[in-house]
Image (cartoon, rainbow over all chains, first blue to last red; front, top):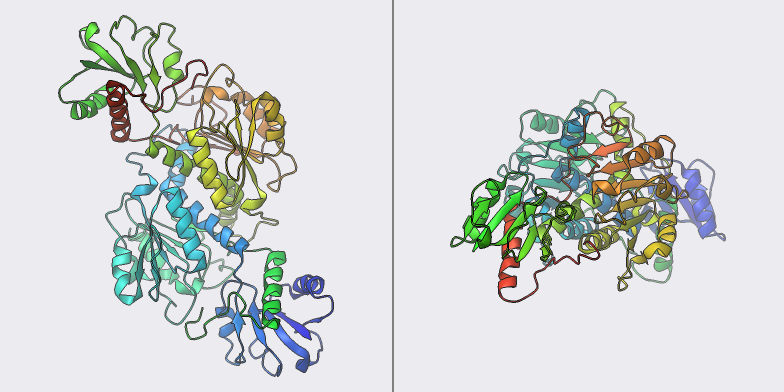
Length: 314
Length: 314
């Protein structure tokens, strides 16, 4: 039984991890000759179009990340289960990122940095505390719910928005569907996007949506934090929203094109904070173990954690 | 019954709050004539030496902050109960500050800001996650325990140090006394100081102590966050420690002299983050209500929350 590594970035490093985890199996990469009939599992990130077709015994495709849009854009993807990483390490890291950047805005880190450069000892007038600030999390799955619970415990007023109705969550207001979106946005001072990329969410972070965010908040206007998917955002609209005061600031971990091109106006925009798609990176060691556990579950006849519902797209 | 406002900063604003809370009582400030025998309570911040003596019916002194060192340095302070503010709002704000600045160091905010200025798309090699980082909180009272629980929930490896032995705390290693200090420091990557100012803690944050912090941590060396009292730190030693690599960075909310003098080398030090004693500011409204509740408890014959043990000094 062969495991095929089909990642666009450093496939050889994945080979090393899976050789350790499955010493009795054959671990191959796309770039070398292998028996296509022997492949049972593919470990994938951003594979070349069609590279997973013609594998008659392929039982499952594992994403090395939390998203699968980089897999499903392949029009020749075979009809097999796709499994994404659900990994406590990844969840912890996303929580760190979301809490950090909400607190950065709450506690006016940029304002105090400017005061320090001017050697100026000055409180920020009317500085709110977390209970006065309404964070809205778009995408309330495993990552969203974890970040929401942590923000709530820090003190923020938290709501979530999901595509479909969820069970109620303790202490967090949940909005859902198209009908719930406007009410959710109208009570949101800091919008955190953790949506998966689907045809419904492509370009959802646009000027029209930003215009529906709360204008009456204690932070003086809304902020955006996108640590979901780059194609959920319209970057030209983010710049317009920042320049016209519709948004007060944006923290972006993901972009329409990655790496972010040198000529993007986002790099130098004074109201933009950029991180290079590192919000919830996980170590190869953690991800490999998580995928190995998924393979073992399948071979025991169980459902692996992170099995994607392909109709929903996540 | 008169309530005397003896704060060095904007006493008239406190008068307004207490007039609303106690409409039937006389609220006076130090600057006006009043019957000294009628004063039962004093609301105090940094009062002039001796200004609370000669008040024969004074029943209690209330600090408008969490600390009382600004009160007890008055050699003519009468022997009456001193009560400090223990206020959920203050606790929440301190938690925000501590979590924010621990996450700033964990998630290398300064590194990514520099990358953005250089338009450079670059992960930080070997970036750790919170479980790999050992935060040590000196002073594990109400504020320290709250911050510790929040850091733990974010994912950090947390320990506390207290002057005297405490009951064990769930999930947090507690060290205590002089004997426990070295072991506590040796396992600490980010040192958070929330100690009260007493004769034992004056100047405790010095070069000798910094030299005992963990050198083997995943952040590449230790960091200091002081949001306790300025006189706990030796600022010349902080600069030396930063310049010699004993410390990697310092976030300081309090200083030996406040406001921080213009000629302090801390302002321009690239490894120092300065905030102007705002870590756990609370609103006058919240503090006034908290003090009013303390007065009512005393008048019902109960102990007010925040009663200071004068032998310990906090």
